[in-house]
Image (cartoon, rainbow over all chains, first blue to last red):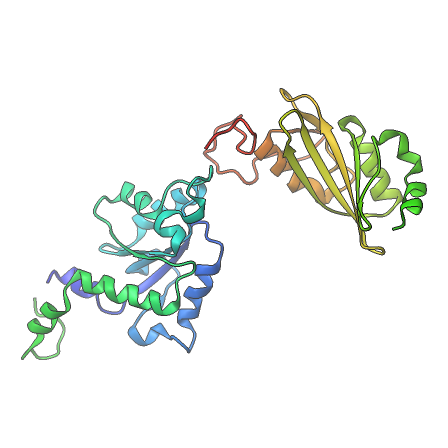
Length: 163
Length: 146
């Protein structure tokens, strides 16, 4: 596996971007950090700068005002990175689809900057915290199938990647 | 507020109003023409000591309506001054911000979304539309199709 992807799959640090969400998804994301779900046990941690982040958690449908900022944040995120569209609005603008203030769903905004961006979708209004964790797991699985990963590791000492 | 009591209190501006509509015991509408709005709001705010709540702007097809909502907190009665702006091409009305500073932002918002010009507004600027929004396009007007 590409060493960049290998390092991306270790503890994922995430940066939270709100592009016009109603705060419901944001509350559920904060819920992930509370003792009940506690994603820090998986090494998932909220960080204060996109330059430290492996993934962007994007909530909200992407308003015209926020789209410019989202592109800038994506440019500043260390690559490779995963963009998680959290919630119905981020996945496809939701009920704001025909609003005059919308710049388009998150994936099309991000793809204007990077056509090959890795984008994961977690629908729901808001998605449950369990679903968000499941979405992260599925995205990581998609980066490299679990079977390959396990097969490669058989008989190998547990050390930092030699490749 | 009792209807008769209210009518007495409103008597100094009664000739400026097109009517006093009691929609409910605690809900009163005061329709008027746009040119009297400053005088009426000054009377309600300064003389009757009502609390300014919020304003509403409506595109009513044949005219624009600006509604200033005032609350009488002692009785729980809400009075709405409903001003009609007949000129659709260049809608203009007096700003109430010089008498009620709290109305500054909502008037900016109505200017953004409906294109109503507020005379004597101290700080008219783009408030809630995005920075790259074109000038002269007002998204909540009826003729705008999305």
